[in-house]
Amino acid sequence: MPVTKDELDHFHQFAANTIQHSEAEVSWDDLFIRWQSSRERSDINSAIREGLADVDAGRFRPATEAMEEIRKEFGFRK
Image (tube, rainbow, N blue to C red):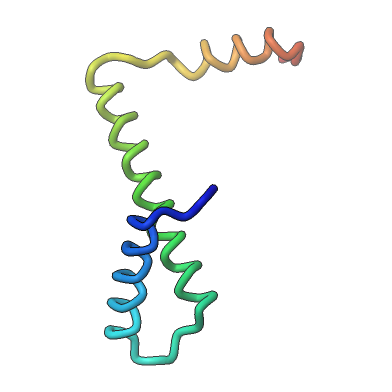
């Protein structure tokens, strides 16, 4: 996936803030890993919020029902 200017700007802002508030030296690899983790955490939190909203709105199925469907679809036995 190509890098966009917005992503580069976001990384630059993240890196500058991390370096400014870090007591120890930070490597390029560490900066990138921290930035990527931060982005993934944001995506995960967003997905959790969506899931909780679905549950609150009554849009869910019992796990036993979903597991039974998966068992049948893939030929698993109980």
